[in-house]
Every structure is written in structure tokens, then in C-alpha cells.
Amino acid sequence: MAINAANGVGANGAGTARPMTPEERKVIFASSLGTVFEWYDFYLYGSLAAIIAKQFFSGLDSGSAFIFALLAFAAGFIVRPFGALVFGRLGDMIGRKYTFLVTILIMGISTFIVGVLPNYASIGVAAPVILIILRMLQGLALGGEYGGAATYVAEHAPNGKRGAYTAWIQTTATIGLFLSLLVILGVRTTLGEEAFVDWGWRIPFLVSLALLGISVWIRMQLSESPAFQKMKAEGKVSKAPLSEAFGQWKNLKVVILALIGLTAGQAVVWYTGQFYALFFLTQQLKVDAVTANLMIAAALLLATPFFVVFGSLSDKIGRKPIIMLGCVLAVVTYFPVFKALTEAANPDLAAAQAKNKVVIVADPAECSFQFNPTGTSKFTSSCDIAKQVLANRSVSYDNEAAPAGTPAVIKIGNDSIPSYASAGLSADEVKAKSVEFNKAVADTLKKDGYPEKADPAKMNKPMMVVILFYLVLLVTMVYGPIAAMLVELFPTRIRYTSMSLPYHIGNGWFGGLLPTMSFAIVAQTGNMYNGLWYPIIIAGVTAVIGTLFLRETKDVDIYAED
Image 1 (cartoon, rainbow, N blue to C red):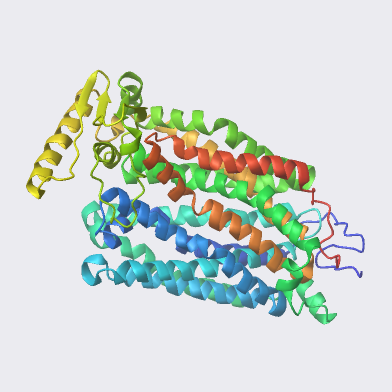
Image 2: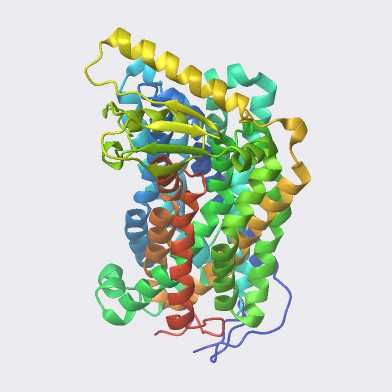
């Protein structure tokens, strides 16, 4: 193979020691900035999930509305692998540059429409339906975006520097989230909470139109990647990248390994550190949204440089050991870390849970699955009513079996509150019983030290930032080196297609469904920490499979034909 002077790559794939060229800086800056804006668009929804639940799913009870809003959030992730197939194929056939120009247009326009979409009160069920369609369009676009940007930068990078160069792309998701939080906080504090919840939440979505214009202009300045240009000049562009990537076992087995042994674990660590932590603060620990967003933003600001640190380190010691260590640390530390977060953010709640544990004593046969996203299930048994009352108050509880036919009882410390069954009662009787039961539970929780909200004066804010910083640091370990590793696992002619699918199944399905699955587990079991089992199990599987079966790639020649 001839020497590629622009990239310092020779026939053996060896890199030359030299500083970054102006062209490479331009490639990294333009690719990263456009991708930041695209992630900003995508994560606005997640950052505003609680408000969107009230705006578009107001026909449901508050608990189901929030979970359904998370499902709509997840819809964008579910379709990401399909976007990876569609745009990955285009990227391998017509080029990297033009493909991610299309994706950013789809993303930006869809985001803007969310900002002007009438809510449930205005157009009824059409509002959440249109919202979900727009989320799916965003997911399709993002499915083609990341693979294009990562491949594009990697194919401009000299050998021995791909981890460092592509790590800048890895920062974009976090910076996009950080930017979305800053814009939301700015608008929120300027307008005030009431106006923001009513209509001000739309402004961050509308801002995306300006960001779209900037992003498209920047990307128009870029030239095609040298690896793709070389392949095209030699007439080696794949005519059927999908069948080559997934129809041949030689490549398909690498795709499967990349999914199970790499991206699935990376995804759940990413979403636990940057989204589940935020939802946990606001929903379970009852920290006000502004404070929670500020804490997350501070952690992101402190940890973001470590994407580049770990990306650069992976050029020296390898991608695999860093990623696997991040997964193992997540498995070992998540439970104690989130319990420490409870003590720092809401010490009154932690103290009440330790001193006056909440237990539901009920006949297991009376207890239904608590996940009710459509609001159509009517809970009438004494167990279900008791669980729903506690869930609506975000109270963590344990379950204890009672003899068959025994009405459910909520035990709070030394106090016991009998529940009731609503079957066979008139509407007036149900209402009266509900008011009486809710008041009894609320009064007892208050007496036994359970706070309605986290007290800002009692928060250990430095410790909160330290804990959240640690969670994001794990994100940088698993995410910083992963773009380089995915690029290096696959040949140039089918690289965009091959790397995009496992990345977006891992991040779109395993990661994107994490908030929904974790909160559904919490709703069913009652214990607010049980949602952590979802990321712990998946990260554990990735650590085992990746360590045993995935090869190290840092010295791979990405210009080789096979």
C-alpha cells in the first residue's frame, strides 16, 4: 500500500510521530461541533422528561405519565439501529460526508417541530403520537450520525493517534447533554418555574434551528475522508455493504462480539452515569430540578476532559483493558455509590429509611405488575392500592408476604396503616377511602421523618458533585476509547455499516431503555435501588465476554483491505 502522507500511514500501518496538522484540527472540530449540536437536540427530551410527561401524557396518573414519557424517550433509541443500517449503507456506498449532512438535517428539523408541537390539552392523543414519530425520526438520524463522524475522524487520524483523535467525538455526547442542561437552566431561571413548565420549555427546542444552520454550514466545508477517497479511486467501494457486513459469518461474529462484549456494557454505564443519575436525583431523592441539573452539569464539566485522557491512554496500553475496567468498577460500586448519593442529597430520607423502614405486608396473589404506561389498568386490590400510593410519593419500600386473603398493610417504622380494596365500592366510597388512606400514609411518613422534598440547606453539595463526577468518570473510561476500537474492528469497505449497528443496538436498546426498565423494576419491587440491577447485570456480561473473546485493536492497520 502506498504511503498516505496526510495521515502518516505507511504500508505496515505504522504511524509517524508528529503534531496534529491544521487539516486534522479542522476535521475534528467540524465533526465534533456538528455532532455536539445533534446530541444537544437528542438529549433535550431526556433532560425535560418530567415536563414532557405533563405536557403530552397528562391523561395518565403521574407515575405512569413519567414512565410513558421515558418510553417515548426510548422510542428514539429503539429505531437507532435501523438508522445505522440505512445510513451506514449510504455511508459505505456514497461517502461519509454527505451521509452525515443528511442526518443532521433530519435531526434539526424534527427537534424544531417538537418545540412548536401542540400539547395533549390542545389536540388530545395526536400530540403524544406525533411526539413519538418525531423521536423516531431523531433516532433514525442519530443512527447514521455517530458512525459517520467516528469513522470520518478515525480515517483522518495517523496510526497510533486514533484513540486520542476519536476521543474528541466521544466528548460530543456529554458536551451536547451539558449544553442542553445549560440552555434549560438559563431559560428556566430567566422565566421562572411556572412559565418554564407552561411554555418556556419549548425555547431550547426552538434554539436548535440556529444550531442546525451552523452545523450544516460547518459540514459543507469538509472534504471526504482519505480512506474512502482511496477506496473509491481504486474501485473497491462495496456494492452491497449490508450483505457483506451481516451475511458473512467472518464479519457477523465480530459484530455480535462488539455488541455483547463492548457496546452493551458501555451503553448502560453511559446512561447510568449521565441520565439515570439525574432521574434518580429528581424522582427518588426529590432534589429540585435546578439543583439536580447544576450538580450533573458540574460533574460533566469536571469529567469531560477524561474522554481525551482515556482515549489517548488507549493508544498506549490498549482500548480493551480500559473499557473492561470501567465495566467492572460499575458492577462493584454502583450500589454503594448510589446509597452514598442518597445520604449526600437527602440525608433526612436516608435517616428515615434507616430508622423507619417502609414495608408492604400483603398476599402476593393480590399484587399485580405495577407498570401501567397506558393508564388503562385499574388497580383495585388492597396490595395494588398500597403500592400505588407509595409509588406516587416515590417512597422506597420492601415487600413481605402475608397469609392468603389478608388485606394489605403498610408498615412505617412501628406504625401500621391498613389498605383497602376498591372493588364493589361506589365512586363516592372509593374517593372517600382514597382521601382517608392517602392522608394517613402522608401523616405517618411525615411523623416518621420522611421528607416531602430534599432540603437544600442539608445537602452535601460538594460530596454530590464528587459522587456524580465518579459516575461520569466511569463513562469516560468505557466511552473514550470505544470509537477507535469499533473503527479498528472492521475493514474500510463496510466499516460505517458494521460499526454502526452494534453501537446503536448497544446504545439504542440496552442503553436507551435503561431509564424505562430501571424505573419499571423500581415500580414493581418498591426498592429504589433495585433499578441498578439492570446496568449491573449487563455491564457484568460485557466485562466477561469482552475480556475472554474480544481482541485488542490499537495496532490494527485500518487501511488494510481485510
